[in-house]
Length: 243
Image (cartoon, rainbow, N blue to C red; front, side):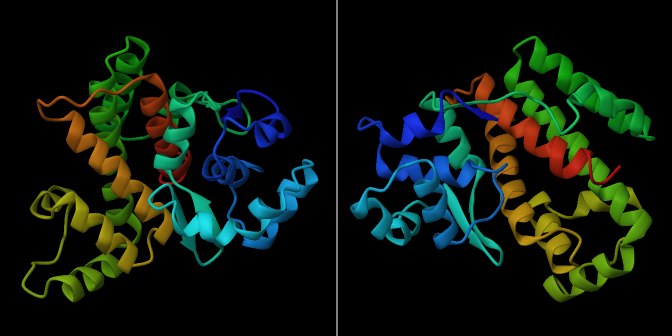
């Protein structure tokens, strides 16, 4: 992701709200978590020293949920916050990683043919502007990858967290048995087993909501930026981590 123009210009633009400026500042430095003091320092670094703004950063942040979330490492912008900035034309998105690796370049790293197949179709759907299909397929592929990872590496931890959450639930022994667990519950159990962190869980919950919206007939309208953000998150946090 990159700013549609220089961040310094965006901060002094009177047409951009203070809440949106907070979101822009949270994106600085690849969206790493930031303390309130760090957000203030970044604003001042770019020459934005509006006293009212600087003294009310905490207040703005507390009113920005669910576009931001406070984690143990600081304040972070969420996918909803990024999508808001994209829809306003304040940031642009490209599906890239550190070394310009594209989504397609992950395919050869995934051993399981069924996951590769879903990922290939998700990419093709995105390129053909079949955005709903891309969201659904990429989610199914990401979830399958996570399930395989749990089976291979953390099944005991997962089952322990599963029993804590639902004592009547039978433990999982093979991948096919994950179908007995709702996808939302799967995310909560993975978090309880320390397989994923809180921020990742919260973002995956948003991805799941988008997937559910795209998987049923309704009036939901989505565009390239929204789907690109969805894919970018899954690339960086699932496909690049759980392979």
